[in-house]
Figure 1: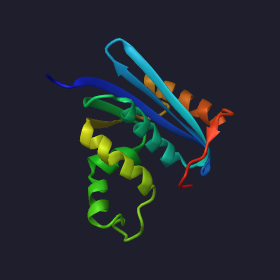
Figure 2 (figure 1 turned 90 degrees about the horizontal axis):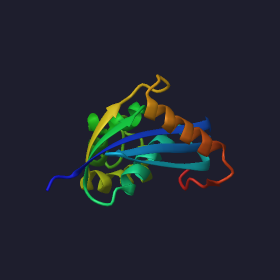
Figure 3 (figure 1 turned 30 degrees about the vertical axis):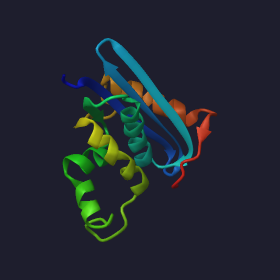
Figure 4 (figure 1 turned 120 degrees about the vertical axis):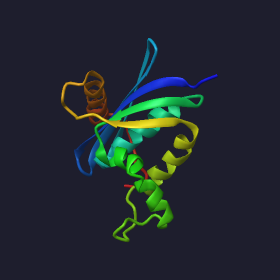
Length: 154
């Protein structure tokens, strides 16, 4: 039996960097659509981009084939350009020998990417893509909400 094919769109937003932030994600499976979002008291844009992907992949209850659209080159390139593999080989240091930022979240990605077959695709933000725009609205609304939680590492 083959895996379910899921399409996911994600986006993160920060009002100030660091500042209040939020993420949004839309999961699409056949005729089903699920939206996710959460706001944080103090965070960064990159962390919100990452948390959107983590939240969406965590939502999947079984191994899936995922086409994931993000407007974050940071997130996409970490996997498509194998940055994360190099960081791990180098003891979580960058090519410049500096500690990798957001290591706590990168570590959350690893088991999710072992469970799911994820193809990362970049979509230009604010360019009229329906689901990217929905994610952007979800993220901005979450960042502006009164239901903010703490981002542990910031």
